[in-house]
Length: 230
Image (tube, rainbow, N blue to C red):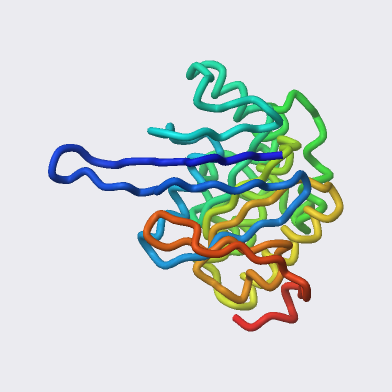
């Protein structure tokens, strides 16, 4: 479980100092799919970066299964991220000089496992294992990024606008892959998106504005990626 209590985060200094997160508290259960919504500047990406251990906090606490991130050293945080989390962003961040198989293998190597081919198969790209990123479409590259992240076998998968750079057809397909893999592997999934329709696929929706959580709602009528508007 992730426990966030009275979380505050500042950026800048002196006259330019502003509060990006303002006394935020929320609990996220193991295995949940959470979507975080909000306009640009609402604090949703900062919130994602802080609870995933990518950024530090100024006040409050973030705990994973009772282990408080703010009390960890940089070395301990690095190990925590390696052992527990994976990330998928709008940009694919694939290494262009490595083929698909080797990009995905990087994730498996971080987890100390040789089990990476099954993730390539899961995202439908086993036949393109020897292709390089430049030889793939945008949707295929994002699916490689998904396979690489999941090859780490994370407890929590963090996603920041994973379909933001994709057209509707490709975006739906990628979202469908992610949701099905989450259901199969039962990891916790926390996604930031501008697309309010995607919230209809989640267990709970967190809405943010001006660095605060303004609403948390249960989704009583979940839909799949092909049932929602876009």
